[in-house]
Structure formats: C-alpha cells, structure tokens
Image: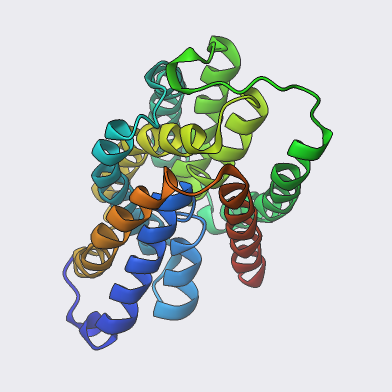
Length: 265
C-alpha cells in the first residue's frame, strides 16, 4: 500500500537504506538483521509490514549487487544452486504453513529472534576465533571449492523457513554457516555467494508476504533510494579489503544485529 504518513520521515528512512545497503554490499549482512529492527524501533512500522516490506527490499537491494560480485569473481555458483534448491522450497512451505495455520506470528517471531540473538553472538565470536584455532593452510578461491551438497541443501531449507517467518537470517546466519561448511573459502567468496543466494529466497518470501498484504510501497521506495547507491559502493570494497578486515567487519555487524534484536525482545 502507499502511505503518505511516512513522507515526513524520508531523510531518516533514505539514510537508513543507504547504511544498510552499504553494509550488505560489503559484508552480505544487514538487510534483515538490521533493517527489520530499524523499521520497527525507529520508523514505527508494524512488525508484519516491516517483515514483508523488508523482504522485497532485500531482494531488490541484493539483486543490484549480483553483477558486481560476479564480475569481481566473488561467487561460487555451485554453492548458490544447492542453497537455493533448499531455501526456495523451504520458503514456499513456510508461506503455505502460515496461510493454513494462521499462527500467532508475533509469538513465533519472538521465540525465533531470541534464539537468533544467541546465535548471532556466538557466530560473531566464531568468525573472530576461527583463524586462530584452525591449523589448515589451504585457502580455496571461488569455483575451486568442493561443494558439500547435502549440508548445503539443508542449510538452504533452514534459511528458507526462518527468513520467510522473520526476514532475519539470509545474510547473518547464511554467512556464518557457510563459514562453518566451507572454512577454507575466503570471506569475499562467502559474502558474494551468500548475497547472490539471498535474491531468489527473499524474492519468493517477499512476494508471498505481498500476497498477504504485508507490504508498504512508499516505505520500500524510500529505502531503495538509499540502498541502491549504498550497495554499489559496498560491493566494490569487498574485493579490495583484506580478509582480516572483512572478518572483523562481519563480527561487528553480527554483534550489532544481536543488540538490535535483543532490544526488541
């Protein structure tokens, strides 16, 4: 729906879109973990509208980063295909479950977000500690990484369900679990692969929520006005920053995402 009551907040919303777009382009994290809490806490949007609008926002924003990350060689397309093979059916199944059961989404989202706070904190620590505890010297680049089909497909299935319900997890949880599944893969490949996979997942989820009436097009337009230039800049930095800097950036974003979620529990 179109909502003129949000027009007075356009500077904050556009700036918020730019900041999240920049972080998504640089780290793959933020479209759900940061944007949904921002919309609820600072813009005052109802949770159902925040989730539905954020999912379409994430799909369009991340779609704009596909070409840059592909051109920079940051995407393992085989991993993307296995992730999508699980996440798209998982998203469709969750949409069907929501439509059929009509559960108390606020209660379910509360439980899931509580678990995500703990997961995000532990994941941020794991990203920082991993280089110090691993003994392997092997570093995989792009398409040279061997794919683990079954665990990757199961990760996609889990992400499809969680993202459709809360809009959180496509970037934050996706990057972390990909790190655990493919520890030898450089951060920029993890980020690029995760961003590309999030496009079909958030698009399917967002269209499902659109059909339920959970989308505010005025808000979506203002967010995209900021996020599209932001993600273009962030995507260029991913391939130029050292791996250590990207790991610290990922850990910091995950901790901030946990704080944002915790503040709304």
